[in-house]
Length: 237
Length: 224
Image (tube, each protein chain N blue to C red):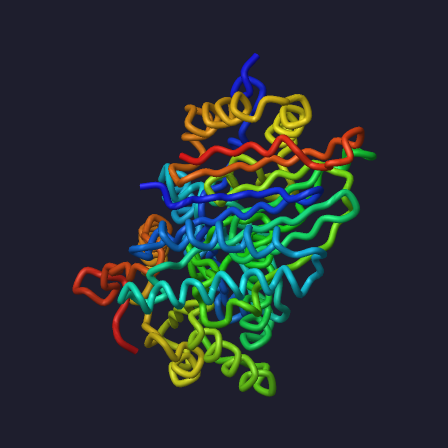
């Protein structure tokens, strides 16, 4: 059963996105991912202005919600373990906060340069990562401010093999990322875009790279439209 | 053209990795054994390259200590690894070699993390016929290994020939007892190593992989 969830919201000229991947080893991680995606998005979109601290604060709000949920439901908070990737943007700036694996990739509108804004943070060994339910999660949250003029691609770890280079080369795998960013730039119809993305993620090419759940969220900055980033598209399978 | 047609996925090797550092004593006293060690390494190369999974998962590096400490080549995927040539010479700077192996493992893990690659607990496999001659560095090496083992950052296996100082080896492998190679059984030892590391590289995370007992009656080792 799919353990990835994502949520997004817009308000005036700002946008919030949160993507979560529930831990395969935690029995209710699907619920955790769902709750955290909604809670972080809501905490971000209701703020007038965002800074490093407010990104972390949104994570804290979501963690408190998980604690309450666990207490009410009679389960351990670790049963709700999930990773978190969050983005807040307005026409002037973009913030991201990231805990655990998954990746955020950026394409600059001015230089077309494609870079990893935030890469996966692994634990010591295969299949170990950091979750919002970990006791030391605050030590592992990475918060970053970026210029506004770009496209963003937010992905869960099921897409990492397809989208990242193999050693000795590092960075994003351009033959994967470039068509996605072009697609985001040219897609005006959100539903059709989502359907195309879903086809990609469930297709044979992606299946051969990983059998894990996969989520891709694309956000594209449109300079002519003062309401900033749009074309948010995603697919979960 | 659909999005799926346009997008290409990275199909190069992104398998989870099992690092293996071979820490080989090539001091002067190893001269008579060097030929056997080399053919043992050849066997290891052959076995790993013929294993369709392990060839993409196991990554090997060889550090020798004999007079000086040398990293021969770098970390290579088993699929493309070629066993290095060995020459016996000098004394036994085992402490410095262990230090280098731990540094190498840490830098490799950093690289894995940067690439978002999963990896298993690295193995360091130490073979020697003697005792460290860089005594002042020994306590530091022991402390580093002990800490790394305690935090499950590395697993160090130590094998000595009959003339090895097993008291020293016990200090450097706190988590598992050193074992003594039966005379001349180098090839058998390396085959065991390749099969063990292959099994490990195919395991589930955190799973304990039972290894074939090298001290079984038909095995290649005995208790020191």
